[in-house]
Image (cartoon, rainbow, N blue to C red):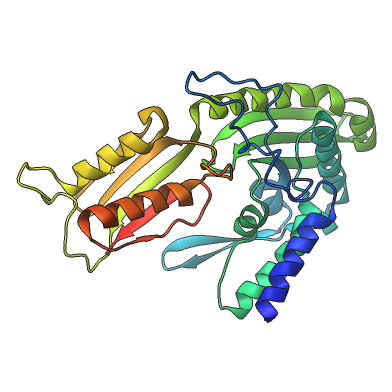
Length: 337
């Protein structure tokens, strides 16, 4: 009952802001609502198509420079501890710039996942995970709670620059990187360096002139994924106790489990687009796998859904149990028992 209450509270917080967690709290008017504009001829009308939801966050570099990103080693893997709340509280200028960038996207019509509203839900989710003895990074929780289509990472600094032998001047520099939340692929960038201007003056006078070139790159990428599908990775690996190898034949024709997996991916990836990167007895791995943006019921289709389709097909074909171990939006992962 306690966990149910916390879940409801998280949803309430995400819904509270007019631009929080996708703006209106609906899965419609999102990137995934594309049934009316995507067709078999690959034609798309981006004017009538809703824009992708975005979320502006401080970059890892900004967090690290300010002392709000630490790492720990667990079982040979590097885990990141990102303190977004601490960074925003200690860096008011960066917070102002994030808010201004967010406002610029809202004015254009992009659904916005608001960082500060989301962090409130994040604190509750973190408390829930702590009670369940789960450890999740802040960025992972942000992506899972509000699932923005595009994350916009801000790298921000103000440095003292010597303008004469006796005088220094504070100059502003920042960069923006738009990252596809599914594939972690950089899709747009903007960099401004050595701006000899106050932050408030830049926001009021120049930001609106710089943002359009950035959003045009995002729009171009967005049109591509509407037509050609999202890019994800797909990994199939064997459990250590598995009784099969992927290189084993499963019929008298010499077809292997790896052959079947490859053909399944070619059939179910959009337009057959996928690149096989690794093919061993214990694992097969594909990158640049294109998948549709929406399921048959119009809801978002992601890596977990793709992996689940595979899991059911593999079980039905071979009667071999397997598990959908997908964690992120864009990394599909199935473990064969």
